[in-house]
Length: 215
Image (cartoon, rainbow, N blue to C red; front, side, top):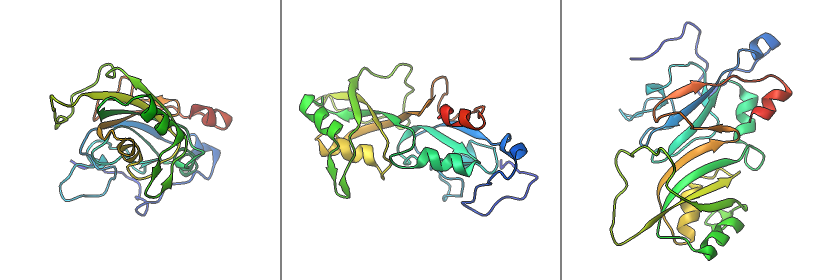
């Protein structure tokens, strides 16, 4: 069932910009735990699930997207300036991912990742990466990751400030460890803690200097 808004919707892709302090106080910020298979858009997609199937809030748009086969935190807002700050490559907040990869990356592979491997579209920036245990309270994926008894897997935590298309997947593949499952768990200070897949919550948005510190 589609949720309707009494206000006239903006043109596709447009974000309302607050013109007064009063409107600024009404800016909206949503944290959503995107399930696997959901497209990170509101427009119809030939029957495939989209953000519109989960989030009934009008006029909000993603500040950085996730691929259909990736899971985890998507930040949405109706504040154009905030959206730009969150999604700006190199200057936005760090984004942390949990990646389940094929094999067990050794120290040399981790060092390559930290330095930023070269991809087909150029070198990547240095990042933070470490091996971790299976993330706590991890939900099952639907469909599940294919299990192969002969090939062990390992979880990595990676924090980066770039946002190229399928970047984490391409980086781990470049060092010999393709990604099997990818979950974005943090954007700046916001996390998916206590946020089951397919659910969202509204976040109080400080004003002025406090807004910057909230990221």
